[in-house]
Image (cartoon, rainbow, N blue to C red):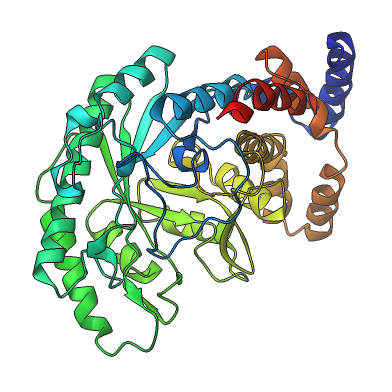
Length: 422
């Protein structure tokens, strides 16, 4: 365990270091408190859900690798895991649910029949532990998605099934937002696309547009529900064409006043996702960010504190967009301890935002405006050596959560006492 006096001394040294650059560390910590990361429930059980006792991820353009022991197999186990994760993280979090995680109580409920009652226990649980919920339709791992198309399908039966499913998720999400007093984001991602060369791209996209128009006919108060649309460059089985491209959803979201979701794993590896943020926010009121880490392809590796996540956080802070951007984790790694995967990713995001908040942004902007590019670059490089870790350690300490590597021991204990017995 880290000594609190040592942490305090290190923080005071760091505070003085940042003050010399024109930054107040106490103010940065206060702003960091306002960032609520939406934890993705599907990391805890490898995207299996609870539609049946034997539920497993099947197709739909996504894949989980690894079979590390201890994954959650029941709602009670998943909630226990999430509560453990929250206990190891400073600040406040939310939980992001997929529709297949309903409390179906042993009943077989197809996705076009889900109701609020199947998620009421989640709402009650969230209320009890004091967190907000977000939601997602589940348009994969279903026979009606086996051909690679859902709401852009030319099969009317299949298309109407998925339209009804998403309509119901919007209604459920709105109830979540209403009961919990914080808007629930209902993020729509569909796996629709073609493995090989597609001819009628325009036709599929016209169907998708019409389906979305039908889905959004019913309006809900924005204080209850925020609708979001997520694009993808390609997926497994949709390597040659994805119907819901970035350009499609960008146009639809802006025209229809919906949130656009930027998933950091859903673009070409050489694209800078950070650069898209200030562009989109010139025309959209809000933006959803799904934080993942693609390695060579959209592989959903655990997020780490790297250049990409730093650049994303910096762009949000530099754009004064903290209140306009919602942040959620979205990855699934079954090859390591799943609790640990949550903590690494969430803390990496927090570290990135803290680093951005500690940057002397106004001073850098002034240098840039005055054409002092040498000074701007020098200051940016000098900031890299500042004691960010000491500030984050202090933030963890004042939130009564493990500091530094102490969380590793906590996770080992949980694995021995809980996960290993599943």
